[in-house]
Image 1 (cartoon, one colour):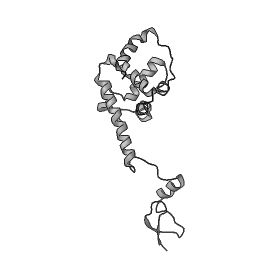
Image 2 (tube, one colour):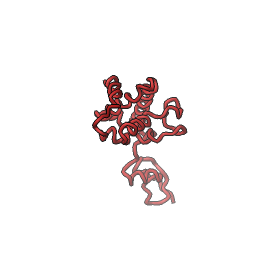
Image 3 (cartoon, one colour):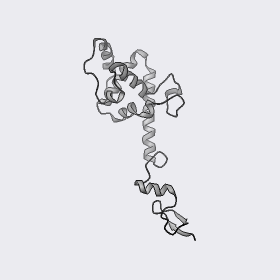
Image 4 (cartoon, rainbow, N blue to C red):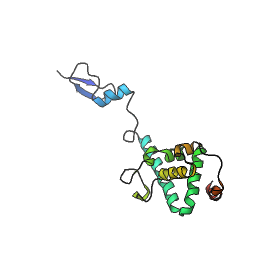
Length: 165
């Protein structure tokens, strides 16, 4: 015997197959046991906006990076890492995002111009921190790098000063 009842999670009306049914479907049942439906791009306009802003910032950083001469790119990477160290959380989030760090040409991540020739800005910054300090980008933005700059980095430091705001 079916009984019309209301889901205690979403409030939808449904025909219960059992007299003890509380939820309209397994999604609502699981969501209640986990403390609610997690906020994601599909269900939340604010999360969608945050993700759009995140990927827009990534694309703007890539456009700036790939729009400059290759000789200036290391200084720009250093400037981005220092901005992340200084507390710019959006830059830090872009540079350390696992999705951007592990992006491949075939992934749905937004590579600039969708080409392997243009890795994500996170991949470029990670390569820079590994080459210069021998540490991951996560350690670099946390300030866990060697403090002393060698003589060979003096030119890089001069170029870096040009890009700091």
